[in-house]
Length: 234
Image 1 (cartoon, helix red, strand yellow):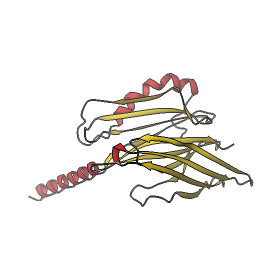
Image 2 (cartoon, one colour):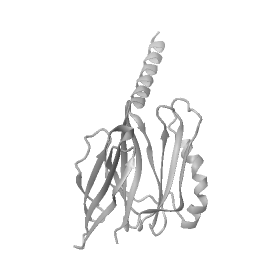
Image 3 (cartoon, one colour):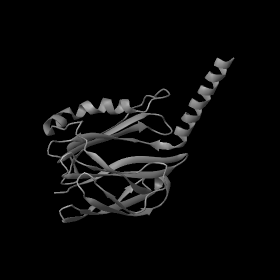
Image 4 (cartoon, one colour):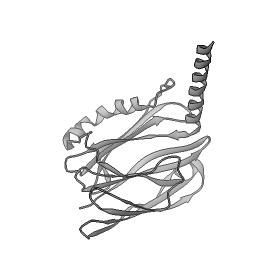
């Protein structure tokens, strides 16, 4: 009897967690896939399960950091038609897609272990950060101020939104870097707003990657996908 009650309780807990996850909407997972040795190329991906279809999907992007653009042949996206069983997160889609990047990975010597350092991280569940955030790289002593400026039109999947970033980096040697990043006039269809999710410094401290969340309000929650804005610090 006691064992039956424990099993029933465990099943109820798992069901509650599954319902909670489903109610969160369609939220992708970000994957840092590493830098090239000179930190001029950054590889990242995202994966998850579409809502409400339940199909696994993955996207992988290779970014020219100084140019803040994708490399030629540096974009792969795929949604798989199969339906996953409970407990899966869609990561298999990413593993299936990654071999297509092997020529590019070899050409630029991208190291999946060279992921740099996270110097800012938004914790999901907290209130959205203010448009202007400040943080510090305690290893190098560089202090950052990052402001996101955005404009939206419409609502839900029919809406669109544009943004750009104003960055100030105050280095420990007294020098300051000021840059505007992004395309303020590019309204992306199906996006309602943007949020800075994390900021990554390359292993050699010469490149900066700002991971931006693209958020769309949908029935049952939100859809979140990722993009990056990049620049050289030195």
